[in-house]
Image (cartoon, rainbow, N blue to C red; front, side, top):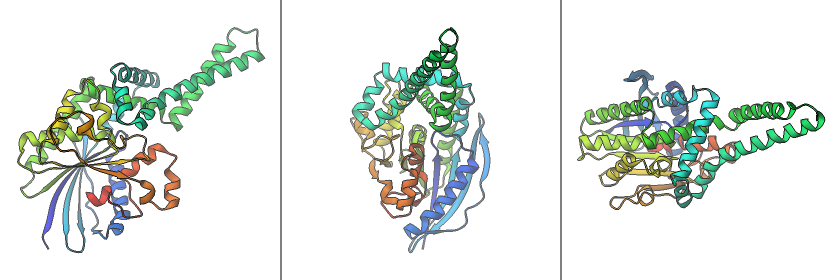
Amino acid sequence: MPEIKRLVILLPGFEHMPLEAHYRRFVREAGKTAPVYDMAFTKPSALEVDSIENNIALGRFSLDTRGDDWSTHTDFVLYGLGDITLFYASRNPVTRLLGGLFALLDFILSGTFFRFLMTSWRYALFFVYPLLVIAGIMAAALGTGYLVDDLFPHSPFVLPGTSLLAGICLLWFAAARLHLLLLMDDWTFARDMARGKRPEVMKKMENVILHAGSLISNAPNGTEIIVAAHSLGAICALPIINEALSRDASRRYGLLTVGSSLLKVALHPSADRLRDCVANAAQSKTTWIDAQSLTDPMNFYKSDPIRDLNIAKGRSPVLMQVRFRHQLCDEAYRAIRRDFFRVHRQFVFGVDKRTRYSWHAIL
């Protein structure tokens, strides 16, 4: 039985997790998924952590997988995009909040929000969510101020002081429990990527693209190449495929995007370079699978990047519409369904039941 050789470039979403945590999650969830698909794998190699230029962490590990009549040796290369998200998260809370509001305003004034509405109304609701949280905080803080002011009507400092204190407490709660500041960072990052702002971040992304392109071009002939991305990792995946095509357009590449936020950036009028990368991938021999889920409010459900970006020539991805309810036992699904961040991560978690989509089974 011949063994397939495969190189997988892994690109996580917008969350600050160290490479070690991504590695442990991948191995744990792969172990859960493998028997569901009648697969078995050997103990993976230990994670080797390194870094590339501009302090981007890089992890490598390998895995041997087999089924009834096949076997695969896969080398995984995992890029620490969390190093980029940490840049945003390390700023002070006021800067993070104001930066996110400015980014949201940019998406409205540029018309991008209205493109969200036409492409996926569910995603438009996700866009509005942080604005509703902030509006609710302001209303609750002011209401608290007026309530306390009624008890102490002769002090001019009670209303503004109480409102400010209540607002700070509610913002802390929203940051801790409702992921408000993470969302603000997420939108700031998306705006920066669309407009090519923040040179230090753009340089980090460019280093990842060039490094991955070099690894792919140096892979031995006969090696299967897959670039796999979750969420906002997709805006790095398409430029990597584009870089690989610029080096060798005759080779066939695989692209897997799951819970993709590609259109979040690509629909912005300033994101010409990203749209060009999508067009080049669509017009190449690249096999592209895009997995979407109705349950996840943070992806563009029922979207087609080629159609929705008005790309005239090229093949659309294979669109997989996933129902997490059908992949998980009832207890597991009930445990995650009201936590939209956890639902969004389910794309890269293991499954209890066999369907046509599984992150680990495909890779």
